Figure 1: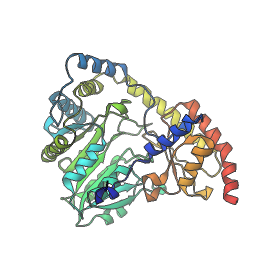
Figure 2: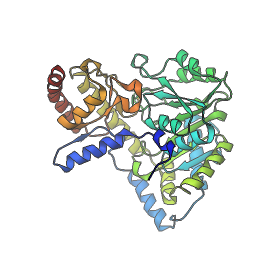
Figure 3: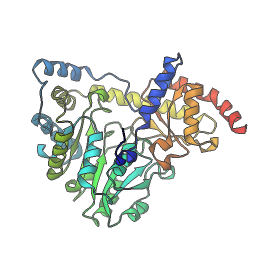
Length: 395
């Protein structure tokens, strides 16, 4: 069957491809340490699970509104207002089965073929995939290690043209763990004040996974920005709810209405019982979140120390999320070759930096959403494998 031409423009998320390869090796009897996929290894907190069970028993098993249950939308607005100091109303929010539909529908609703979209590179691969899919022009914004895995503000300003329709920001960031401080966001907002027709998709899915004195801020907090910003948030990372498929957006009411129409045409609605559980996640006890973040910080410190002991590796300490993005340029091999080697030879699954864009060459991404014991074993296995990689390079 011949596929439509636009399918050739559709990318993928390499983490799932590497997961499949790792599972295939495990089926052959190999032991694989999974540091490739961005999925918390914790159980969903008990109070959330119990609320879902109750919701099923109470009949929340039927269709709901495409934009989300009214109580869910009200809870989202209340949460965002509390955490961002804003004034959203329920009609400015929408719930989806995951965060990716927010990316998909925002780009689809706002961008025409030929419009330019500025996106972080390296960055979450679905940004570039969806920009290309609809026929817009993907304009990479380089994220560089020398800028603490942020971007150069002057370079950012130069990239904006009369064709720019949308800018994608991601803080805290995947894959680098980069973090935009309040001062950075203020500078961005001042630049965008000169370009009133440019919208912003602000991916804030890791907003609660912060370390030390880091404090999350949204671009929507700055004067004139709420009216042109779409916030992407969700439950997968903060509450270990990846399989529940729950994400949400907040933005201008007319855009939310358009996105609800896309939802009606695509997936009808998000599971009703899952939304009831999501209200409990937002409004119930947050102790499990605090514990998870503390454990992520412990793991971060272990993996950063371990990577910096490996020959040819250097690794910055991220301020947020649960990823590290070590520099491996001294190994003298393309990042994908190194990632493939570590999976096949060392039994450690990670991702090439180029899985997140061309500017990721020379880096690997490790997710430390795994136990300290497994992280330590992975570092040992990598250390033992590197001499074999060096001999392969010499040959």
